[in-house]
Image (cartoon, rainbow, N blue to C red; front, side, top):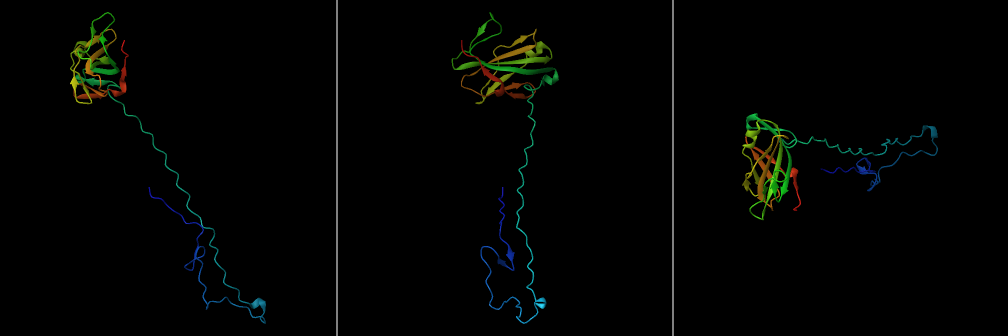
Length: 198
């Protein structure tokens, strides 16, 4: 932004600075004189000097207030997402890092084959669509290094219209994207939480 400077207290009169520099006096220039024997009423008075007033500066322009912008909604997280040509509509609810995965208490317990891996458990609410088709829907997780992995098992809960994808990912990875049919991709970072190891 270009700075503006206003010089105050300087008045230019007859090409000379009235303040700061002063005007050089001319030997030939004299003010009209009044003769001692002349009638004072007929004396010629010096020419009146114009009143230039007090120099002022323009008031500073107040900064404009920023215009608030509306946050952009993320399909699949902030609002429902339609996939498979619109036959299925779902919305993600949670994304959790877990050392083990079990669909229900007492059900089979799954562990990653490598200690350097962990499960990224993605849950979504099924808003519409055939549950069997939702369960067969191809999905995958891509981390920040480009490693892409699909779920080893998919769990569909009919009673609560929910689908769960436990996907094996590198324990050291921290950024993940979910790939869905119809070329939909959803960045999961804002939903990720962790479950402490037992």
